[in-house]
Image (tube, rainbow, N blue to C red):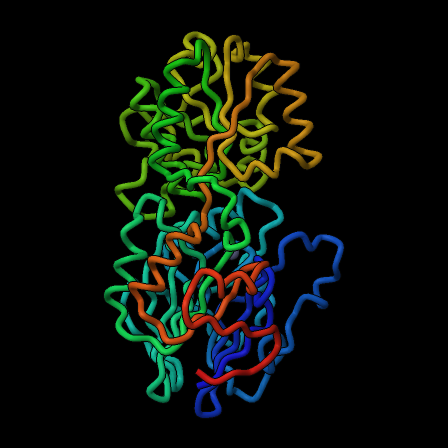
Length: 415
Ligand SMILES: [Zn+2]
């Protein structure tokens, strides 16, 4: 078995890895590089035979670790003869998101990944392992062929809502010859910042929600289902009702999990912002509003007792909330990557909130493991070789882990 990292050996995002054994091949992830809006899309397609145009049939499939665009964003361009495998809940979430997020590009999955359920793709035995990441339904992928074992971590962390999965994977997967390991935060090693966990986010948000005089606003990505759960729990601990927008409610329903807050739950209400109402009317998709009808909350009620609510918020909703006079004494929590606030739209939001006299503070946990957690993982795994991927600092791996073998983009190497 041999491997080629086409993209990702020294960058975060845009991951694409090809694996070959016995003349057959599979691809792990087909990621869109981050920050690519100015590049023509065809320039982003690594040269893999039979991936973007019909090939000779030796490319047997694409396995996608999770639904973030930097791993799945080129899937719509994959040749229709090549089967695509992705988590079942991920497929449902992406289908929901396609309705609400105009920029998303839907694709059809051929098969679904299930935790520890091995399936055969040509000579490859492929086993997904559920991992903790900010994307719901994310997997590490074990690939076995020719008596060799390659473990690709995908994106992982040890401080989300199921932190035990990383250690469980290391202990139970058995001996692997190579681990292809993400290192998003390896460059930040030594910056002294402890990792904020999802539990920390919940605790800190609960304290803030208690202290706010008026409505508590929460800016977050509903596709970050761990965060949706943390914010819901924080709202309940603060004695407040958690208000989802229709998008968040639809994503929660798409997870298919009874453990994820749903519109029918006590303490959960659903607000339909104008932009989403317009989308529903344009698409005549009234069934998704019907599904949340009993839980709907309207501006009148929000205005009457704003101190009772934690509101799922986005910049486009501020006009209507201001007009409904919901924002007196309101405070906002920014629960996404803080870097977004420094860009144009984020800065505009900051100015807008300032003008509305709504305070804004960041409470966020990273989707990626600390170098310390990766170190514990590698030690427990006992892998012979560690090849860096999804990192902008592959040369730092050697300072942190044993058995590091740095490989460049676009070179084949044996497992
Ligand atoms: Zn990623």
